[in-house]
Image (cartoon, rainbow, N blue to C red; front, side, top):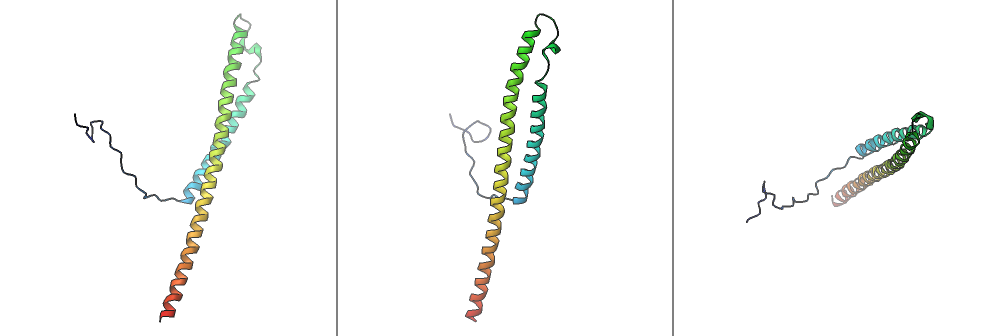
Length: 130
């Protein structure tokens, strides 16, 4: 049985290319978006923490009220833990993306200044040849 590359489920790994372009401005814009999402998630976390203050009487006076209150508290605690982890990770993503943007901006400036220095050197070298 032969392995097929197309449509037959055979294994072929596409070649890796290094044709990648990076726009520091786009990375900066993405970091700003992540920061806005971090702020929104922080607001959600605060609102959920506030909802934790629901009085036990809100579950009514029937026999299952205490069990419902415990279930609510357990579920809410788990949700808050997960939400806190999400808010923390979003903050880390924002910080990391901002850092990457700065690194690319610095690299772009360095390349530009090096390019200017090379051009200046070439011009002075051509003038000395004449």
